[in-house]
Image (cartoon, rainbow, N blue to C red; front, side, top):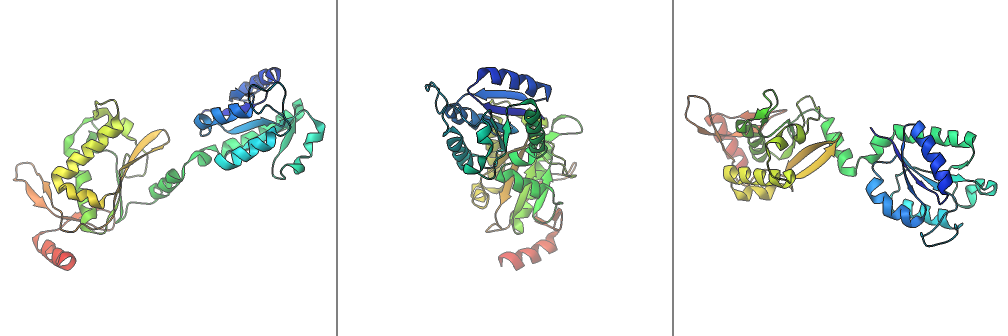
Length: 309
């Protein structure tokens, strides 16, 4: 994982020396000289950087000729409001500013001397150890919790929709496994299907599989359209009423597709099953403890009568 910092300091000579030291420590450095720069730069960097390093006195905007003492309060208020979980450290060349309790008792202030700068990087390394956890969004955190489970009656993992991992090529016959899972969820009590995750919970990613079968420039939209088409042609368009909007999540730089079947469908759902050298037939699946199970005719009749009357 790349290591990066954002320095906000209006002294270019200090920026040059700090950049050299950062590179020695293995960090890339982005730089701005004002609160204006902080607000402009941070939206695209906040998930990439380990921490923000703030000069205690700095410019509010780039048109000001001299630094302002109220910079740090305004900067911290902005970060607290917009990027509360983003670590920050404060630097000062002013000995009087070390008593930072007049601003905030929770902030750590370091002097601009070699000994304290070294301590600052020790603090930054502590932040770096927690960086991956911090940058996970709420949805990603929830997704990790899901992936940490084993497959169960409401959770199924599929590495791909139509890409054979073993043979490294497209195989549209694999679509049946995804559709079978959706049908089983719809015939039971709903569930979550994650495409791009292997049975052993390893994150495979659509980039390594299904997206290789997509020719359009926007694979996400094309993938959704493909799912829409498959679901509509196999189950009817009304089936979408029990689906939440399809979502894509990026974890470990890999894309996962999440499909949620919210509840049981209003009527039994069948799916055409094809077996070599045999006639296709309408199969009926339900969700068992950790798999989708096909019911025979007698079992179907009993199940349908019990669940739909």
